[in-house]
Length: 325
Ligand code: PEP
Ligand code: MG
Image (cartoon, rainbow, N blue to C red):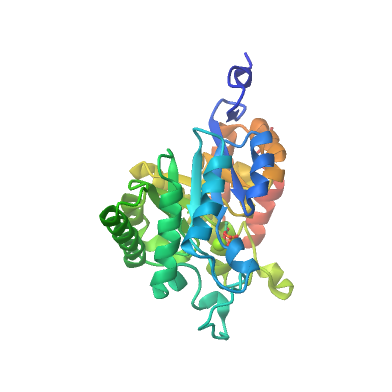
């Protein structure tokens, strides 16, 4: 029986042995949502909010942002999840800011959630705009990028709570109970991953940055491309540790970096227990095909073999062999 036929709008994707894998879309521009829906994404796993901040000189006001986020929720397939990531400024995404200082090491500098926590008013305006736009919507998820410590995640949640308190006082309609989650992009979170799993409503593994920071290799620098190794044993074991902790605490976890759309890496991700992949819409058909060709039971054995490896070259060998048919 073809189960996809009974759910015309939201067909689920299953492995050969019927493990359900949820495929979501990464969205940069609202115009991409059309393709995501056409290709049957089951929701939005990552909406990158930085583009309106990047394309103009100054910052979009709270009201300007409100209309952008409202557009996002309006365009999203009804009944599906929408994951909005707060500003991921800095690093390779350079934004112009009045206090902007040229940093010697932008990737290790004042970026992402660090920027938001420092420029509190910008952060609050963004959170309020998101929650106002999310008023009356279901399945809204708010996500903080580049979290490095539990303290930082708690600080982000406190800013959100303060925004909600202020909007309540002012009688501004808003959503007061979004799920609040975090990107896993820094190896520091591995040490306290169980505590994070208890605190966060969901994890999204950003493998682009996770690999960069785990291996100390700039994700965009061709000179060190040979050091940027998605199947490095430390990366493999890190991802497995996150998936295991999430499963142990019932915390939803997705992978939203480039690894999630790579047919060479999907069997490993499924094998360690990942059941949600979030990818650029154009990759959805290929990812669907890869999932449908993957056997979960084989992927588990294969992932175990990859996790046993301690050398990059041995991991490369296992990867080349693949999970088998
Ligand atoms: C990542 O780091 O993998 C990620 C999805 O975020 P971005 O590519 O926007 O840094
Ligand atoms: Mg990232």
